[in-house]
Image (cartoon, helix red, strand yellow):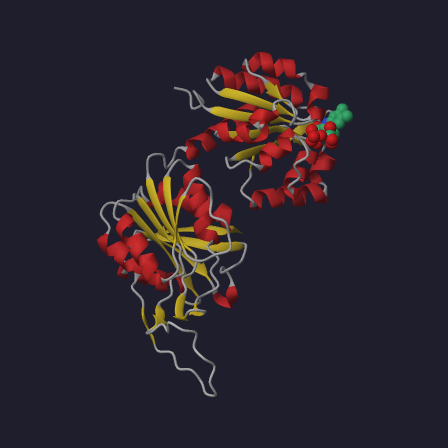
Length: 398
Ligand SMILES: Cc1cc2nc3c(=O)[nH]c(=O)nc-3n(C[C@H](O)[C@H](O)[C@H](O)COP(=O)(O)O)c2cc1C
């Protein structure tokens, strides 16, 4: 059966010469069984009439935010589709997406998209190589947008250079890979812990760490995108948790232990990213401690080890821990993996404040006796996708 059978694809056509190729692409998708909704920019309509796409898809074509406001088309289109494809993608749409502009149906829909977005740029080589376009492409890549690169060859200006829309085969293949990925955790239960914990010593003071929960949130979003039923046990953070995920808010290490250890036993995959405090004040004063003349001594005692308990009590699930190390990274991480009965561990170097609270990170995954994959340095969203790919393709198949 075709990988596209019954799949919902949102095709966004923008105003480039290659817009005529989108008609053939639409036909190819429809022939493979996809249900294709087409959204066009005003400029795209200068190149190909909506009628062409309406006839090919047998569906209404959308180009205005204002056509059917009662159904809020820009939100509905991206809720109903499993993947969005922008082909051809002009320099303009790439710039608008990088800036978060939402001034028409296509830009508004793409800004509202929680589904994977595949971008197929097509433009003159000078436009493509321009620093502004390259910077915008870089921004979009770091935010998790995916690309099917333009080809070099004959351009509409009768010059040769990079900027031709990728071939139909390349675009279909990239879409197929994304659709397969959106199913890669279908039916699986995934439990993720994220964020810091707070260990109070009076009602207004606590011991904590700079974790923001960004890694756990990115992983929860990515796992949900892949079809998993996701529970995110999240320590205090100012970041918004992802939609479509069950969020259990916790404060202390003990709360995290209580919320995570039981559910972990029935999860297929557990990823522990939370920066759980190893110690807590032995006593918590019910009243705010009064500032006296002298110093304050706080005796710290160990908190329960959430990850060790999950590793010890797991049944069939895969348990992946995180190790934030400042020295002897891989040796320490392998030792932690063995001691806590983990299946894999993602190591990040937090020396000099790296990792915590930052937008980007660099991870290396270790598993088994010698399994190792360097995921490189990237945004936390991109690393979340790479980590899940590694767990699905490498860790579980070893
Ligand atoms: C004949 C013609 C061909 C064009 N081809 C392209 C193109 O291939 N790629 C591109 O990025 N812009 C191209 N443009 C410029 C875009 O149409 C223009 O930037 C427009 O504002 C894009 O709007 P949109 O991104 O909302 O579709 C072309 C313009 C004209 C008049």
